[in-house]
Amino acid sequence: MKKIVIAIDGHSSSGKSTMAKDLAREIGYTYIDTGAMYRAVTLYCLRNGLFVGDDKVKEDELEAAMEKMDISFRFNPETGRSDTYLDGTDVEKEIRTMAVADKVSLIAALGFVRRALVTKQREMGKEKGIVMDGRDIGTVVFPDAELKIFVTASPEVRAKRRQEELIAKGTPVSYEEVLANVKKRDYIDSTRAESPLRRADDALVLDNSTMSLAEQKEWLLERYREVAGA
Ligand code: DC
Image (cartoon, rainbow, N blue to C red):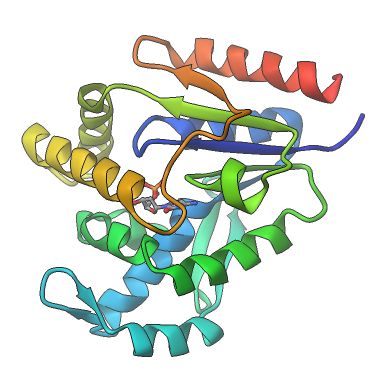
């Protein structure tokens, strides 16, 4: 059976990571969470004092640091999932905090950061057999991906999901705060000059506002079987 590249793009908290991870496990592909890579760069900036005020980044320092920054994924046998590593340490928990979520769009809008991460992502996917999730996978990273999916849901549904996720992780946060963050990220992600979030012309759209996880999983598996001839 031929190995393919599966590009899953969409809005934040649309549930695309869950779908992408499930699919990868089911079909024995490698899952790559590119959002985690932008989050890791953001954490690096927070740790090294590279943010100035609310919305500025010390770009020269960050650009120099990008060359040496080591971002990778390693399998965690305890959770059965891959954790994100920044310069040799597991940062999986820290990159999911609100502090990082608040700043990550600023980092993801920087052209030199995107170019460095896209190069890494192409390297990770060159053997195919991957499910990569992000914002620009079908448009920029792998424009020739055999299967492209664009996942979305209403901002309200996504905010509720995100709030539940954060509460489950022990971070109590109000619905209003999460909704504001979801909308702000949508706006920044889709209006930025560098690789704005948009659906590739040949991507299939999945609006999962009213779909169960099982329904989404089945839908995605069917699309994969159609394309890969499985
Ligand atoms: O999927 P996520 O919420 O973990 O993504 C974090 C941020 O990174 C989000 O603001 C969008 C951005 N991102 C991006 O610009 N390009 C990607 N390929 C993945 C994420």
